[in-house]
Length: 311
Image (cartoon, rainbow, N blue to C red; front, side, top):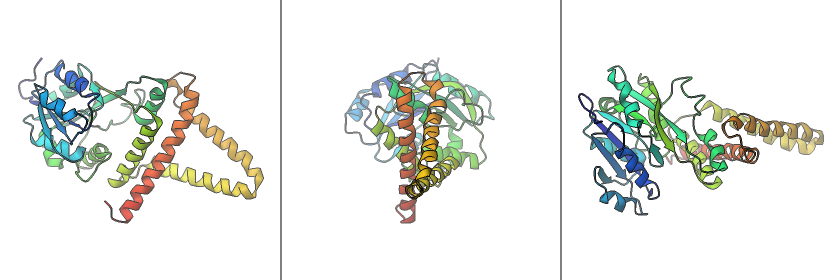
């Protein structure tokens, strides 16, 4: 089915060194139940053959534009001719009905921005355990206003233009910052739970730690201070204080150890329903501590960079 009538739909994606997933992404966009009027992919300067692959593709517009994702998305939208802009990210594979479900709410003129959903597709237990630390799980989605992510998002072009687009100074979490700016400007978000893209999780602990660090750094860069990060910092400051106090008062080691065990158990209990695999008892505590320390480190680097005017 083709888009028609008042709908002219442009799908935009930015990519960088995505040779292993680019074919799957393109095919999924071309095989949508609702065919977009155009597909625009902007390459940020790939060196792994992604750009060469894009140049050979038919049925899409490919551009080479140096810069971060914000630069690429703004550039892609400037080249678009649709009045509805649908977005997904490299590393995501849209389902066959993704676009149809995503733009369906926009039949109502009151709907300006639609938040689609994204689900993790894991190949092993590590990735299954990682997903609850990164994504909003299905049982929690829709319980409050679901903020859009560029993994799965649609916006009227007029709204995008008047809102000012993505902040090109932001390299990390730029879509999170943009969603909050849209909310401050008075826009509401319509959740389309069946507009689903598959998200491909990081493959190892090192990649995951960098992802958590990058997210935290991006928040600080955008001037966003999440309450849970503040609580996390306070929690670890208290833990460090109690540890050094226990060096003087040895009896404190026992309650400190009990608190640590409870914290580890908490990381398992809150997430085990999503995995239900014995190896989760190993990975959940590691991922909890890794994400905690990465977030604290990324936030500290962000605060120091801000203090010294690096961004």
